[in-house]
Length: 115
Image (cartoon, rainbow, N blue to C red; front, side):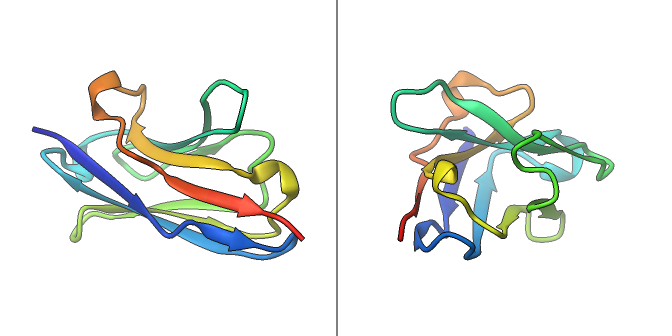
């Protein structure tokens, strides 16, 4: 059974930084393409960043240059370093495989960017 648990969200001012983490059980990040997704109020869930099994990274246009996705294969964790946060980054952030598997969605972690 796969379980993905996100953490690290919070309230931050514009221009600030946050680091999100995703802990996994039942899935091995070393062998699985994974990504970070987000869903803002009233909007569809979207892919923010993804990382392949061999470590190649891809970012949405909105995340490029500001966010960094990484994984620790030894700890089986996924991270998203978010810098220069903007108001429009406010959303619930989720980790999942890429492409996502519906039953793997967790609770997510709320990121609120506000002055």
